[in-house]
Structure formats: C-alpha cells, structure tokens
Length: 101
Image (cartoon, helix red, strand yellow):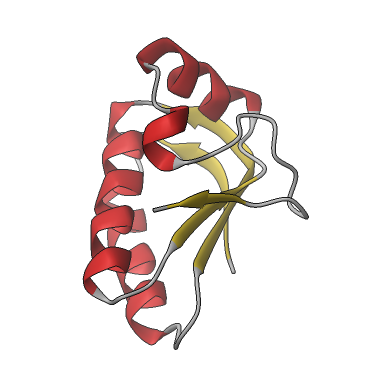
C-alpha cells in the first residue's frame, strides 16, 4: 500500500510522480492501493498524478484502489464529478477500498 500525506499539489508533483510509478512497477501482482487519508491539499496536479497512476496500473495489468480519500480529495472529486471515474466511494475508509477499474 502507498500512503500519501500532506500536499498532493503542484509543489510536490515532481517529487511524488516517480514514487508512485516505482511503487506500481515494484508492487507485484494484485491491486495498487493508495491511501489518501492524510492528504491535506489536493489540486489538479494531484489529480493528474492519480490519473497517471491509474493508467500505469492498468498497463501493468493491475487494479488501482483509492483508500480513505481525505476531505481535500473528496472536495475535488465532487467538484469535478470524478468519484465514478476512479470508482472511489467518496467516504471509503482505509478498510473499505474504492476500487478503480
């Protein structure tokens, strides 16, 4: 499981991108789970990272699951009506993954 905390914003995108891609590449079989419970800020750069992770996981033949999206993530998903795109239940807890197809 990948746990992200703090900002998922333009200010950290360059730092987070290789970490996400490496975790997907090295993760072995099974779903890629990203815990978003501790994300304090989330902007379109953070959204682009999740979209990239979804594509990379799909190319690796894996499913992407977003766990426990924080209020900051939920707000952007609601604003852009993206919860269904990611298959994420906006209030899923870390124990209840929202699966991404």
